Image 1 (tube, rainbow, N blue to C red):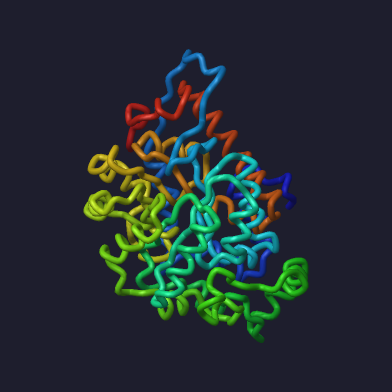
Image 2 (tube, rainbow, N blue to C red; image 1 turned 30 degrees about the vertical axis):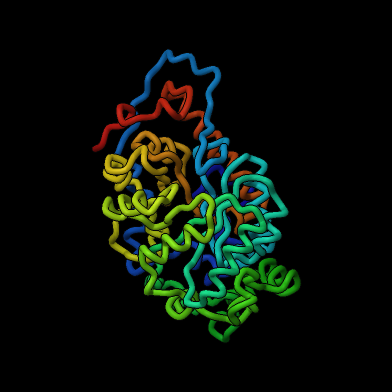
Length: 382
């Protein structure tokens, strides 16, 4: 299978599976417990139908939106994800350049494999930093100050990782960051020589946004569950989130809000946006799909705070359904991670291009000239 054989996100998933060692692929593809929530995140979009209008004169359409104070050419954010240079040697650099080419928001994680400073200097497109709240207060301050100096446009505080979800695929494979070669995993890496050679001989693995404060930043092998459970602060509460917002001073989002009550508290604390998200099904298995929560959250806080539907997006029409339900924007991680793992920057660009085509085609077939015309009259639930 080649890159030119990829015509949708599932095709990129298959190509990534061919090219990655299975512990690395399972880290991207896997989720918590029985992986029910991961499946629901995408399946939820199939539970409602689009209702098109015709003869609408859609020769010219406008797919752009404004979100978090910056213009985006599509109603789609490339959500921040960790460890990208493990999946492909180009890592976050490839995603940043692809996002800039298409005029999109994208984000990097606290656990990114390229530094805040390099990403800030690399592209001028809107940038989000996914903030994990650490026990080490000095590390927290350092990341805020580095984002300010690098002129990041927003911080998204991740609020759904008080403890790690039980990611059973990673437990079985022994996946660590960085990948650790053990007798049981050696064969899985050896039979993917292209990945192995890139990993061994290209730039040394690092987590440069952490390396000034914790040993995990310098390449010490650790499981993601172990990292979350030992390094992140389970005492994080609303008061700490408010202080973080004040210390940052810029656009501020909460990533991982799923309930109306929390959405209202986000408004009360002065957040600019909430990302309705269950961490790609990687935390609380059995939780609701983000798309299923959009309507009740928008009914409670719509117009008071920007609402981003994060997770499960595999098609351009999924983004259109999220907006029609009331969200201001859609976002996702696996939708570009599979493509990154499959073919680096070229893969990410092809994936975004396909989604762009699907969004444009979907709007024209629905008789919609701009995203503001998307509303619940365009949807019917089964």
